[in-house]
Amino acid sequence: MRFRPCIDIHDGKVKQIVGGALSDTSSGETNFVSETDSSFYAEMYRSRGLSGGHIILLNRSGTPEYEADLEEARLAMKTYPGGFMIGGGINSENASSFIKMGASHVIVTSYVFRDGVIDMERLSDLRDIVGKNRLVLDLSCRKKDDKYYIVTDRWQKYTDVTVDDNTLDMLSEYCDEYLIHAVDVEGKRSGCDKELLSLLGKWNKLPITYAGGVSSFDDLSTVKTLGKGHIDVTIGSALSLFGGDMELDDIISFMKK
Image 1 (cartoon, one colour):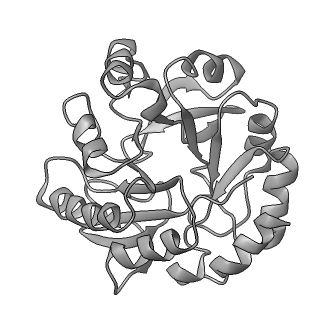
Image 2: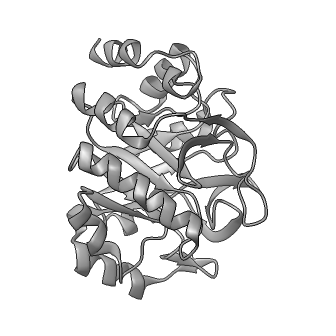
Image 3: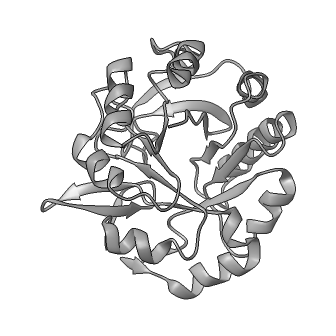
């Protein structure tokens, strides 16, 4: 179990926004807006040797706001080359440019999961372009009818694809890792989704990073127990760097125990 740092960028600023609340017409419920740029956080992570972090661009691709997000992402990756994966607006045409920019991997959801299903042609293209070892699939999900369905377009649209062993097995042929937000608890500091963690903890074939609801060291213990020690975790709004109560160095110490 490792701690994976994150930098979420919206309107060109480092922010923490409640999961599932962001849309084209609303900036959602914002927990935190940073007064410093992304390089501050990148250096914080770099100096502590925290690799495999995630930069997520929250604005829609093709907008002036997305271009501002990109500038912030460049700052972070210049400060910590190879220290971050990046997601948001990734497609077959631009994926390689993010690798050249300094990202270790590209993270993809909506480009591959569209019209409710998996676009296998796009998925194959991305694997061929950046390589399986540089592709991360974001399987962030919400619960409906007792199943977890992958959601896209800022977590607003349900697909017909469920997160289960069959899906994880099939997609593992195309990617290096999974990033999975428990969208229903993301950003709410209300505790983790234990059922989802239990489901993921039983599958141990690729690295998985879990995000959502972690707000205490008891929650970290829950992730470790239900994830059977092989599910990594990222923390957003609960981290002191983003206005929360959990100190980064205390989390690092916890992970070393």
